[in-house]
Length: 458
Image (cartoon, one colour):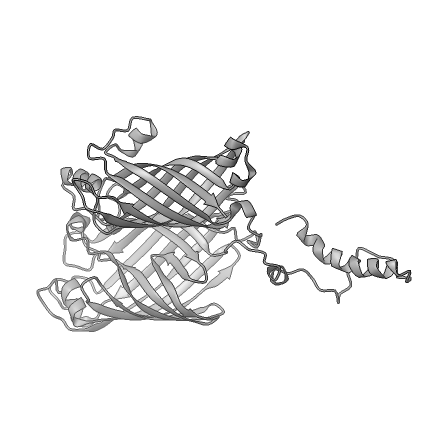
């Protein structure tokens, strides 16, 4: 917060007395103690002066999910590594493995275009071949009041197998704990049940399943939190009686950690001008080298010269992490992969959280790291050719990393109008986290691009 803001109410109190004194009117001596009737400076009053504030709903985390396998298989459980992103503003929200775009909302009601990740828990050796886990899409109505939240959604998978759910949950905070107990009914169409439980061999008909559990978050220190979720799902009797199904009750758990706003530090600081939104334009060249070779300066060029061009937008989240001067941004980008002799034009979408640490060495330099998700309309040649050699089926959805290093252009040219512009180098990286995640197709590998960019803060 700028240092002068807390003194604005005092200045407003002094001004009338200054005017009266100039008119030679006697006044009572001034004191530094405010009367109870004097208006106090609040975030609401400051916002009327167009003061911008960091959002208080953001986070990035990662953890391991363990779930029972309901099918009649030798393996009883399956595990996954899952990254999580949390962010919300007036237009859209992300909450771990679900998110949506607001079509309409007020303080208590929302209508959203909605997406949620759906797990299909089978032995991991079959997950690369089937890749049944996916983000499904639909519409959601949400009611919120105090800590109560109730949802109704109608969803479809990629092949128009319909299902829906109604969910009630309560958000409770006490001390360092945040608890979110929930209960959910899931209606599934006959085509959905036939495919995912009857394995396209038996049609058990439509049905109603029930889930309940609790999501927890524990504040360790500063921005660091522990995450733990526990849940159980009861499949309907008609599903349990199928020869393909062995367990009617499916238990799942999740343990991990994440970085979120410090619960003990009010997150109402005005956004500094130099840390406003940004736009980044980049152009990059593919490399068959892995991340270690690139970081050690041993990268090789792509013989087919595959290239990309990207545009990223960043929204400031915080100007510190663990009390260190680290700028955090929620970032979303569109990437265009240009055609070549081995691939057609294709598109890529990215969301993530990016951190910058600034070094002032006369010129300002920044080191940046981003974690997020990347989805491509078609798998690129540089990625597909590597996975073919390893006998993997490629996945369009992969984990996203970005490593960057840039310098302030205004400092280089000693030109103040360019003080918000940065010139840099970054690595555009997609990977499957070493076969640990069914969300990414249980693959080991991915793709890398060396890029140069210009980033402008405004």
